[in-house]
Image 1 (cartoon, helix red, strand yellow):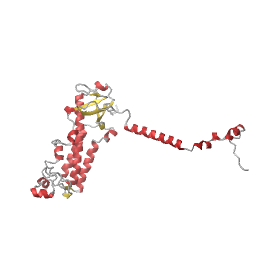
Image 2 (cartoon, rainbow, N blue to C red):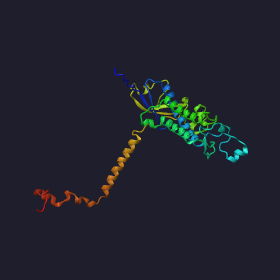
Image 3 (cartoon, rainbow, N blue to C red):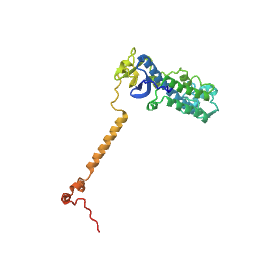
Image 4 (cartoon, one colour):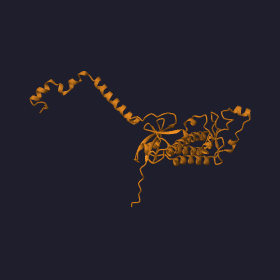
Length: 299
C-alpha cells in the first residue's frame, strides 16, 4: 500500500440564483433532496450574512460604532437641543484610541479606530469575502457550511481584537454575529431564503423533497449539473443557454473579424487584380517558350 487515498468522486452542483452564479457544492447521488436543500440554503444565506457584516465593518473601520437609533441622522445642533448622549460610544473605544472621522450621513459616531486597528478590520473582511467569493467557482473550490463559519469566526475575532470590550448592543455587526439581526423592511430581507419557501431546479424540473438526487441525475457520482435555487411560486427558471458567456464572446469576435476581412476585400481597388500574375498577357506566351522564370543579369 502506498498510503495515499484518492478522494471519492462526488456529484458537483453549480448553484445559481436568478441566473447568477453563487457557489459550487459537492454531494452524493444518494442524498435526500430535503437534506440537500437545507444545506444549500444555509450556505446561500451564510454568504449573504458574511457580505452584510463585511459592508458594516468597512464603515466601522472608517467611522467607528453606530450611534443609538434615536441619534442617527440628526445634526449636532439637534443632538444638543434634544440633550441626547451616545453613552455606548464612550464605553466602546477601539484599542489604541480613536481618530476623529465624522460620518457625513450621521449613522456612526466618528470615533474611528487608528490606522493599525483599521487595517486589522479591513484585511480580515477581505479574507472573509475571499472565502465565500464567486471566484471560488473559477478555482473549482466547493463551499460548505464549515467554510462559511470560518469566515464568520475570523470576522468575530477581528472585532474582538479592535473592540475587546464588545460592541454596542444596537451595532448591526454585533446583531449579525449573535444571529439577532432584524432585516425587516430592507432589501437584504428580500434576498434571504427561508427553507420552507426554497426550491432547487435542474433541467426544467423541480427537485422534490421526499426523493433522492439519484432520481434525477442517475447513479453516476461524477455528474456535474447547474442547479437553480429560488423561492417557491416563481415557476420554472429559464433554461441554461447552449453556449457559455465566454463562448458567445469568442463567436462574436470571430464574426467581427470575418466581417472586417470581407470589408477590406470590398474596399480594395477593382483593378488590383491587374497586378496578379494570372493577369499578365505575356505570361502564357513566355511559359510556352520556357522563359517564365528566366531572370536577366548583366555579365
